[in-house]
Amino acid sequence: MSDKIFVLVDCNSFYCSCERLFRPDLKNRPVGVLSNNDGCFVSRTNELKKLGVAMGAPYFQVKNICEKNNVAVFSANFSLYTNISDRVMNTLFEFTPSLEVYSVDEAFLDLTGFDQKNILDYCRHIKEVVERNTGIPVGVGIGRTKVLAKLANRIAKKNEATKGVYSVLSKENLEFALSSVEVGDIWGIGRQNSIKMKTLGIHNAKQLRDFKNDLLIQKQFTKIGRMIQDELREISCFPINHETPKKKEIMCSRTFGVPVFDLASLRESVACYASLAAEKLRKQESVCGEIEVYIHTNPFKDIPQYSKVGSSILPSPTCDTRKIIREAWNILDDIFLSGFEYKKALVKLSRIQEANEHQVSLFGDNDSTRDITLMQTMDKINAREGHEAVKIAACGTNKEAWYMKQVFKSQRFVSGWSELKKI
Amino acid sequence: MKQKNEHTPDILKSIELPPIEGPIIEYPKLVSKLSCGLFGISDDFIEKYQSLDQLFIKNKFSTFFFEAAGDSMEPTIFQGQVLIVDRSATNFHGRVCVVCLDDKMICKRVFQKENCVILKSDNPKYKDIVIENNESLNFWGVVVANAGFIK
Image 1: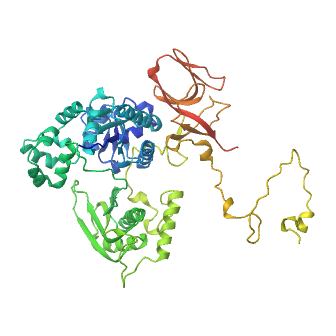
Image 2: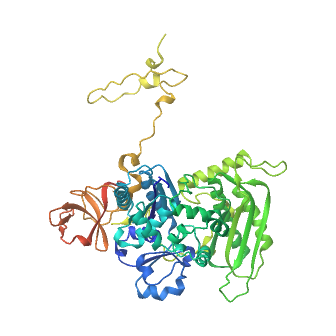
Image 3: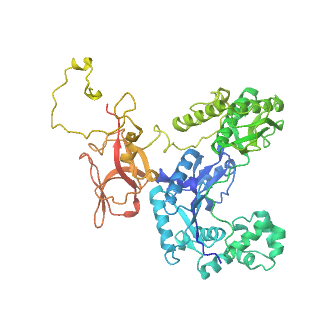
């Protein structure tokens, strides 16, 4: 059995909680946040869940319910959410240096070595400090492994009597948690796998832990399935990852706010997505060797349909925005057909390698020191003066022609000075 | 040989300096090797510029900014000033705070009494707000400083 102590801290309805932070009038109102372009719900408060609005529900389908119940609906304000997320994570970092930011709203903490008797009080203290300093309510789960911490967190969230903190370090709590959590709700077991497990007679976490035929689990659900089973048995298989692994593919796509017909607007949008992707590429100190561009019409509309993907392998890997845009445009020009109403464009960078390890091509157009310095300078200016303070002219200045629709967006409370909350 | 720093250029001799007011403070002489040119310039003396963040922000991750509206907190806070609000502060009594009262966020001086909380405006034009029902009141943070341009 593991003597480690893993703690999962998870923000409750994170995006909605961020919106509530500056709006006390929303305290008891149902709140929901929509995806890019106001498509579907990506975050819901408990009040909204109770109204039967599902995760991912398209807004237009539940618009009536929302209007009838006075739901506060928001367009995604990602600059606000990332700022608040950063505050939460840094506040948690004060409690332990061994922390893994697992996603924008959850983090694993390694509190191994803490006295088991005091751990619950300590975690209540962590919860209190995070909520006081950042204003974001959190749930805390404590267990011997990551899978168990996640499981405990689930109970902390669902069961009000726990007051948001639950530990499965004791045998009693562990048995209760394992038998009350369905197999499909275990971290890492997807929907597909849960159906397969049920045919084996495994319905809850306890049954998976006690399933005797380890080999069958390995065969059916690969090594990962076996590791999850071991984690349920308090054998730690997944350690804390201090560094976020580098992405092997970087994608950037948006649905257009208004339908786009012309090549010029498509070119602008593709240049913008390529710039964003290239910036991310440089941030993780990588270069890419392949570019893919994809455009399509709206399949939900009764109009002539067209979609096409094109890709190209670069003569030598690059992280230079100019080269990436040039190549993306070449691909776009190849795949574009006029006469269609385009809904979305996507740029994907792949064959990603470390910037300082990639093979230099003998004949290709390698990034020179000059190119790299130029890109770094651009990134630095944008980091200091704001996103797109300087950009490649190909991105254009007429974003209204295609930029995403965000009708319900809240103020920029924490970035810039012009939109501070007035009190 | 004449010391370099005792030499006064002619142009400075012709400038009349104002009489010195107050006590003269003597500074210790800097000891440093001269490489060339200016006296005392060496890497050892480089320090960071003063930063207002360093002065006003104790905890970056719990500090938020607001804009003051209205005149209820004059002469402490004037309309249009930026309020620096720290959520991590725990002592509210007697301090200017951001509080949520029912559906509104307001900025008032908070006094905690035995059975009630009094929200005072620094401007005598405004009446005290006495709150006996704690449920309608939530503390948001303490206003630790305000900043603004002089008009």
